Each structure stands twice: as C-alpha cells, then as structure tokens.
Amino acid sequence: MKTVTTAGLLLAVLFTAAPLQAKQAAVQHTEARALRGNIAAQITLADNFRTQQDIVQAKYWYRKAAEQNNPYAQNELGKLLLLNDQSVKSLQDAKVWFEKAAVQKYAPGQVNLANVYLHLADLNHRDNKEMVQAHYWFEQAARQNMAVARYQLGMMYLYGEGADQDISKARTWFEKAADQDQPDALYQLGVMYYRGKGCERSDCAIARNFYERAARQSHGPAQFYLAMMSLQGHGTQQDYGKGVALMKAACDNGEPEACPWVKNLTENEDTFRQIFSGKP
Image 1: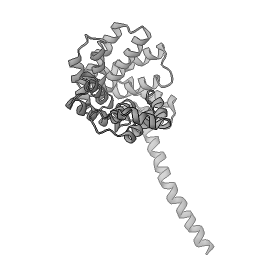
Image 2: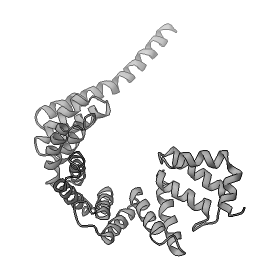
Image 3: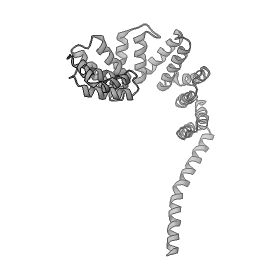
Image 4: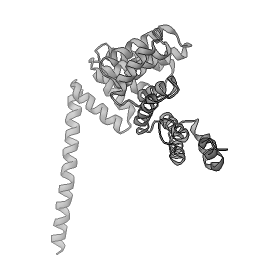
C-alpha cells in the first residue's frame, strides 16, 4: 500500500509540475523573441510586468516597443511615466510619447496628449496656446468615436476654452458621447435641460432620463440632482424616501453637496418632509 500511495503522489507532482514547466518555457520563449526585437513579445512582457506591478520592467519593455514606433507601447509608456509623478518634467516626458502615438492617429494617445496639454495649461494659468492644442487633440480623438474625447470637447465648447464658446456645438458633442452612454456627458445634458428652461414639462422628463442613465453608472452629481427632483416632485412623483436614498448614494459616490443634505434629511425628517410637501 505504501508503494501505491507513493506512486500516486509522484504522479500528482508530475502532473502539477507539467503545466508550470510549460508556462516557464512559454515565458522564456517570449523573452527570447522580445530580445530579438519582436514588438508583440515586448508588449506581452510589458503588459505582464504591469499586471504584476513591476513598473520598472514594464517601462523597459514598453520603451523597447515604443522605440520601434508602436503607438500602443508609446501610449502605455507615457501613462506609466505619469503614474506616480505629474510634475512638469514628467508631463513633458510623457507628452513626447503621447505625441508619437497621436500623430499615428492612435485615439487613446490623442486623448492622453490632450489631457497633458490641459494639465500644462492649468500650471500656466490656463494658457490659451496649450488650451488650443488640447482642443485640437480632443477633436481628433472625438472624430474617431472616443466617448471621453467627445465629452471633453463638449466641455471646451461649453466654456469657450481653446475655441470660441458655442453652446450648440457643446450640446452636439455631449449628445454624441451620450449615445455611447458616457456618464459625464449624460449628466451635462441633464443639466442643460434641467436648468436651461426651469425644468418645465417635457424638458424635466428629458433631464430626468439623462440623469438616470448617468446615475446607473454611480455618477454622484447625477444622483444628487435626481434626489432633488424626487424630493421636490420635479418631472416625477414626489417621493421623500427615494430622494433620501439617492442622496445617500450621491454622498457615497463623492458628491460633496449631498452629504450635508443626507444629515439634514435623516436627522430632521419631519421638518424637511413638511418643507418639500409645501405644507405648513
């Protein structure tokens, strides 16, 4: 019996070791290809090292692929350069790689390049030259159907940054991003309908629809406005309990205005029920 048991254990060890040996062989094969300059292998190594939180090795292999003009590697290298340091020097270093990816029409690189220009503009008191560059690269990515770029472009038109203010164009880009369910764009459209005409009739229902779509993605500001609509009965049936629940969700999702409201609505419920009901 001892011989049988020992043999069984040996087989178990062999079967366990076989996949491990195969995995090690695959890694060694990938490393060999990467060392010979194979871009796909270099990116595979970089991605794996990033997953393992070995940022030094990830940077090394992304750089190898980036130096061969691979836009994905250029973009990922730029992101890692800003991972724990967003100083002017790091922004400038990352900008070099984002730009290399962007000029190859790599949309994520275009978005990241635009964001670098926004950061640099903030550091230079909203310098208009850098805002113009940010606007340009957001537009390039937006025309490649990048939802976040469409939202950002809408914001730049809304506030007249990097281009003349144009509310119509802002709405157009928000709508394009909203078609892709981009939560910030959905929220901005909700704001436009809710505030623009005092939330009257159909506009209030449209605003609520946009807020609800954003709120389902845990968007705190959208949840805050939905809470106020439920408490006040704007565009929906008045519902104090639902309003409080939405206000709590907004607070949990980082909306600073919501937290004091939660405290008041729960600790002074009778008073606030009377206020929102309109009864003395």
